[in-house]
Length: 246
Image 1 (cartoon, helix red, strand yellow):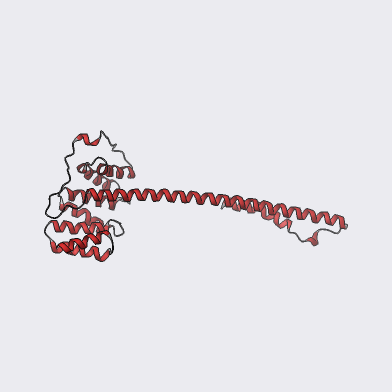
Image 2: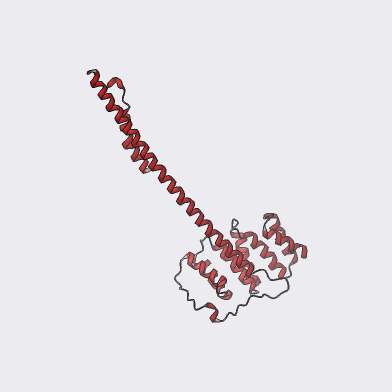
C-alpha cells in the first residue's frame, strides 16, 4: 500500500501535465504549436507507460504474496492434520476401558524405555506441551506424562492447549484407575471451555466414569447430553452404543 501511494505520487503529476488542454499550447506558429503538441503527447505516453509498468510490478507482487499466503495456509493445514492424527492415536491407545474390566495401561515402564531422553525443565509453551505428548506417544511413559500435563496447566494457565491438556490428563488418570481425579479433569473441560473441540469427548468420558463407578443413572444423563448437544458426532455415536447397553 505504501509503495502504491508513492507510485501514484510520482505518476499523477506527470499524467496531469500530459493531459493539459491543447488550447494552452501557446500562440506561436503552427509548426511551434505542433512541436508543443508532440511534446505533450510524448509526456502523456511516457506517463501512461510508467503507470502501466508500475501496475504490472504491483500485480506481480500481489501474485507473489498470494502464493506465499497459499503456501502458509497449506503448511498450517499440515500442522493441524498432524495434531488431529496425534489426538486420534492417543485416543486409540488410551481407549476407554470396558466396564468392569481393569485398566490395561502398563504404568511401570522400565527406565530403558525412555531411550535415554533427557528433558530440560526450561521449556516454552509449545515445547512443554510437546514434551507431555511425546511421553505418551513415543516413550509410552504414561505415569510420567501425568505430572507433565499437570505442570503444563499450572505453568501456562492461559494457553490454548489447556483444555486439551485437561482432557488427556483425564484420559491418563482414567487408564490408571483414578476415576475421581479423571472426572475432575473432564469436568474442567466441560464447564470451563465450552468452545473446546474436546468438550463432547469429555462429556462422554464423564458418562463412562459414572458407568464404571456403578452410577448408571448419572451415566445415562451424560450420554444423553452428548447426543443432544453434539448430534451426528463420533462421541454421540459412542454414547448411543453405551446407552443401548445400560
